[in-house]
Length: 95
Image (cartoon, rainbow, N blue to C red; front, top):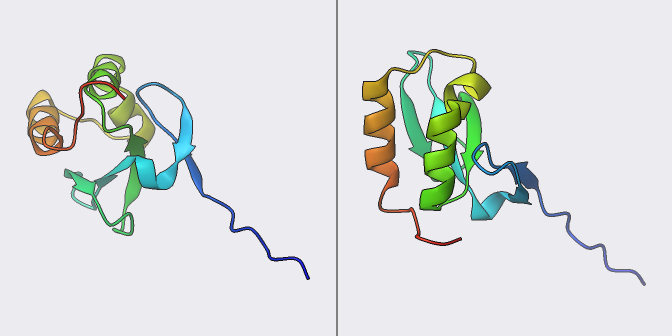
């Protein structure tokens, strides 16, 4: 009798472009009004992108404007500042 192994969902970080298990990443969602916010449940409505919870990935994603490009919306500097302020408690130094 074979026990089925559960498939682990993988997602790609827009900062470092590495594929990692979905549970290790933070999902960022753009809602209908174009507001960005972290989706810690991973189930919020809206288009989402994933980021590693590391300072380096956050900085890389910001520099490459990867979040706005992946979400296909224009993100202002104020929106980015607010988002990164919200994400700062989750960011680890090395990851």
